[in-house]
Length: 361
Image (cartoon, rainbow, N blue to C red; front, top):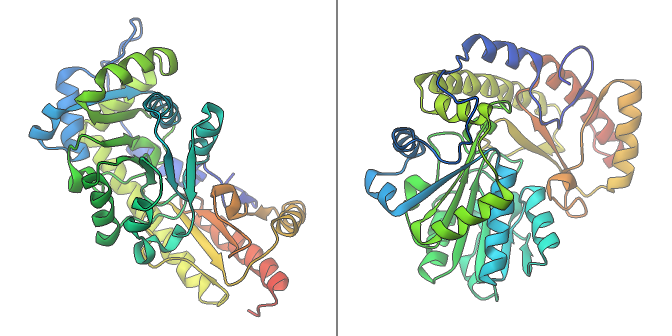
């Protein structure tokens, strides 16, 4: 996707232009082990990774950093841990789809809090969570598929949950390096983090993930990883070596320039479609475009199928990312697609939706 005259605007993979630009920049490190099982970060690398994620030297002494090949495994392992702890969960929606899948498969008790969504920075209320019967809360930062980071209101609310003795899981798998919440919260006994730095930049082939928890969880996480995580493959080792290198920062600068240029183009285009909008605070390559009224998912899917066959461009409804189309229809765009595909595809999709909503261009 992302080349020629067709594209899924909601696609998870990058376009050919971005891939080519990053390929010119990316330098892979040497030193990974082809032969032996690897389960942990080398000590010198762990220190560099901890600092680059934003943890202080004092924090590192209190924490356990457990590497995995991908964030989906991190979610699975933490789900099993929460099952063992016999807690009731609160999912602050929207979250990555595998979170709810894992909870369902394991029979975890949970409540889905979906009254905040993309407006969480204006509407978040920690007291509403504290009044529930949940013992732990799962947050996704940035907000799933929206590119929105939590402001001081939400951060203060999360700290209020922690001060009340609640467990908090912060899934920052798509967090841009430098914006991690650990820079605000640091090491706390009931705070569990998930990171996957290369996933942010659309580099899936050498990505690694890391669960960061207080050392009191060491035995549990370490034993669970044997059954649910496994060893670190060669590409994962390359990933953490690359993250520790200066070349990661150079690649990150290319990534930021690319999505920012595309975001500017999208904002200019949306000026011609007043019934469509996206948040002014988008930061990162996923953004959610909202339509000013509800639409039926089935009707939209049928329309997108026609567009795909007739014009080659389409988008997935936001319900696939956890949004309720009955309240307000939306769809995700990937700002790492080719600029021409984004502009042409958005015109086609929005013109189609304008007919369905009765809005005029």
